[in-house]
Length: 322
Image (cartoon, rainbow, N blue to C red):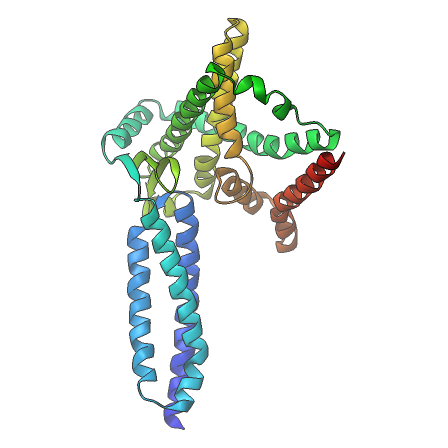
């Protein structure tokens, strides 16, 4: 009986450790989705899981049925966390598959250098880009809803003209330009706030796009509002670039500029939906944390994007049946 009590106490201690490890994995997953390099944190989590697994194997090896019953729940929690860890490790390794071109020094140093010259000006850029980014999130929800309620899909009716011939190529160039300024905005926010940039690059494989990886420790320690600006600046810069190109295109009567603007706006638009792990999703969640008090109100607000998607499906089906 004394041995059983000892095992129960150890089980309680392991449960507390598992709870701590579970929270740590959730934190790592969040920052992994935000583009941080989390290799060292995943390594620490692996060692914790390995040590716990060794202890549980040793306890089960005693072939005591009562001990096995006490440790059964702990073992199930351990297996669940191990599966979660493996999924996160797989996600990290998937980023390295395919063709990856990255700069660990040249591009990060470039952003450190330009932000050191006028930190106040870049701080102003951060705030303006973040405001445009928040506006893009609202636009990504309101515009589809508005047109679906009217029973119109203007973006589809004008699609034939846009994707024909050279227009499609120019729009693709606009989207590529949008990708470059999008990732550059992420880099500027990190460099201007003293957060180390691990690497910047592009990849083509299971995923296609660009990335800016922040060093996890300095990113964790930064002000949460910096995290919000980091995510919002990318989509906001897409909107700013689209606005500048659109004005230039209209003033100079240059359709080429207008099509570039459409490509950049499209790239920002698809990243603006307030669903994680898109940039818009992280920004929306941060805004809810900052400005909505009360767990119930926060849960309702966080569920709104999903309600919008359900509404869109219903409206689209209605439109298709008309």
